[in-house]
Image (tube, rainbow, N blue to C red; front, side, top):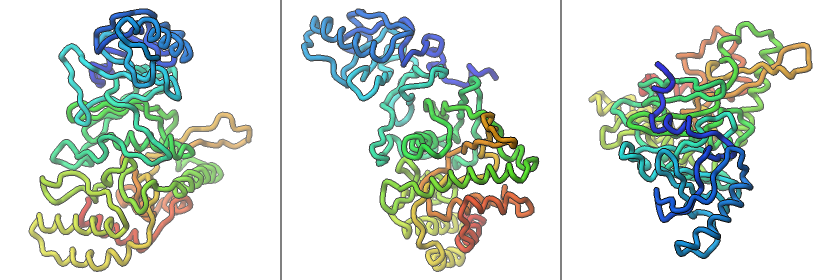
Length: 431
């Protein structure tokens, strides 16, 4: 299958039309109008070489001199709209007046073929793309998420899965657009993974993760356009590494997870996804029935978190018409074991395949050294501090006859009692 068949056609139609120069459409006309498509004045032809300063100067000039003809006398301010003659009718907003030269596109009408409305579908694209990103001029239907002192709430947070089956029953597909961009898409892909990448970039930049360039929702599928990490998954070379090279990687992982443990949750005693929504883990996928489809949460304290887990198991027992003795056991003993744990920034799926390793070619020492990047953040959230160790020790990919099972404890804290209890309920409620 060709790449062009994997991306929504409305996005592909815009890619060859533009070249990037601080977000400037090649040959598009900056003009003033009374609404989408009016474009009454084409006073300035945008150039690929235009800088942010050029845009600010010329947009202000147009507004001062041309807009007066249609009854506007005030200067251009942030939030005013300037139309652009493009293949599809769009509005350019916030060209000037903001803290940065941020150009944002919104589809007003697109030949009757596409009608987007949040939160059921749409596109988000960030401002200030690197020059190698052809998706830099994707249309967007809402402003990029705003994080103020890392306290925020995203539009669409906690949206339910779009299928009767839980999202973890599906696989995600990756497609490389070029050497620097990869698209992750599918019915399993959720926007909260993209929002997690935004949070990491803006609030915990010392945690190495892919940079998100755009998100798109269409029908049952979500598309995440993100940075392609140049490297190999750790599982492909771990066994061949020298002891000193393994030590180097473990040291890098210690630094990353120390930073994650130090990150402060913006809401006191909050347990949920990084976008303020439900907990993105299959143990919290509701077993209550159609009226409660989706993931449970968020939870306002540790007791509510544990109660939600136990109640979900009881719902499964009742749905399957089984005796409730095991549910009573969990109701009695789970709160005793799972207590005294604070919300902690958690990846939720640490295994070697999700740790990308890049050889550091600038190393001036005789031995090799490596940089690491953590990928696949779809299970990330604010979980109790034992959760990372519980997920990392999942029997499906954690083998005690490998040295990794011992080395992982050097950067992830293990809580034996909590992990044992969690693996017990995982066997009953999960896989």
